Image: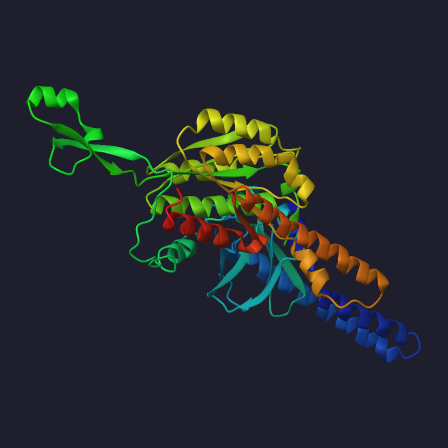
Length: 444
């Protein structure tokens, strides 16, 4: 009985009819005919409710549902969820479906109202867009079923709870791959470009012929063969590229409900995939007070999985970043010349100047690319109409901060440090374009 009691509800239509009958009862005090009519209507209503409840509970499994979830969620992207509902009743069912979405989405009114004919099913598709990494717990599916009379409702609690992990944005990898291998195939002419910092990889030992570089003579092989032998080298095509993510307070700011840190995490996953497809070695690390989540730059089948797991597990308290620690660890652990893509944010020249000595030190042994962000809210203030003195002041201050960003780009360029100043939503595309540009120019 407790099960039936907990799953049975009376609809609004029942209470509306009951209110009308109550009014007729009141009128019946003055006109006896209405009293008789109200009693008959109350009897009919009671019988209809009993019939409604009987046919609802006669079939214990009148409604079936299947929920199709992806294996994992993609952060910042629209993830497709599918519900397949089947009506096993012998009548048209009126359904209200309430999904128990993870608390991160903060949706308390996620309801679908629909009608399903007898013995038929219907499929519902909807999208969820997570804005932070972590575990998302999908709860039960609550379905409230009514007959065409819609006097009573039976509640079904269906579906199993399931936890899904939300990983950095992986749904857009194919789009960025397509862009990298189409738009980036630009011809730069036939002039030879001096490829700074490239190393040579041993290929074979061969006999010396006129014109070979005598500096590559192999004296041991020459002695054994009693003729001049040289080492032949080829240019090493696979270059190490490290994505370095600042986890400090500068990356705490949110745009479109996504933090700058998560924008950088998503961009790192996408560009790592492009790097590997371009036959380079992809690696990453993150830092704030100390360096963590280090993945050594390699080119292997499991590299993307290693990077994806490391990015998923990035955690931070957004404390002040220690660039001196970054420099010390990079100098000790990254011995070969590499491309370092540093995701951070500088709002003022003072902020840059505090870290500039460490950036210059990194740039001595590596090609350093600093990626930082435009403040899109400042652009909206600048472009808005000024109606009073306060608006004018706000516009002037916003223009000052925007000018500071341009000064930062100039200061970095002065010391031979590459930079990308981009809007958060364009971060991934702009960073990939810069990487492809640097590679085509042979700068690393």
